[in-house]
Amino acid sequence: MVAPLSQYPATWYADGAKVITVLYTRAIPGAKSIDYIRAIMVLAEGRQKGAIEAVYLDAGGFVREGTTSNLFAFIDGKLTTPGTGILHGITRQKVLDLAEKTYPIDIREIHRSELAKADEVFITSSNRLIVPIARVDEDVIGTGRPGERTRAVMQAFTDYTNRLSTLGG
Image (cartoon, rainbow, N blue to C red):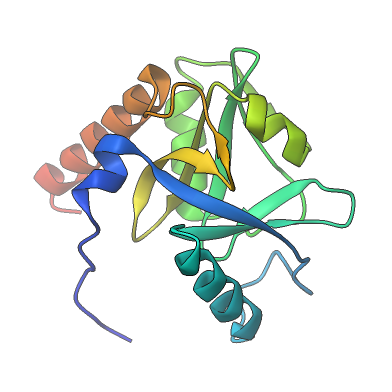
């Protein structure tokens, strides 16, 4: 399918956005599939709560991924992201490649309770790129605004895509 690129609100990137968490485990998390009914339902719930995305938690309360995104958090000075039970997105991998030049990377389980205490949180996807998260459910993340490290990762990603476009691919 080919469709025009969506334009997302500039406020998401400037001020940060909100996500909700929901208990759900995808049957085959490492594969894209057409089974998207649950995602549609939780996204509708999220929009009613002012959120742009729903992040899945497993039965133990560990963060997995969003309906169409991967999640990252700066916890204890490290850029932390789940490594299991997720679809390993292309944008996620590029963010890891770019960020590891500046920040320690910690690929591990993240419990929901850790998100409330995280300094910064962001999500990544091919269509939205990097979106800073200011709220997870009702928890304010850090200062409630996009943090310095998230902005630096966003800038590194922008620089990378700009280099690609000048090279013609």
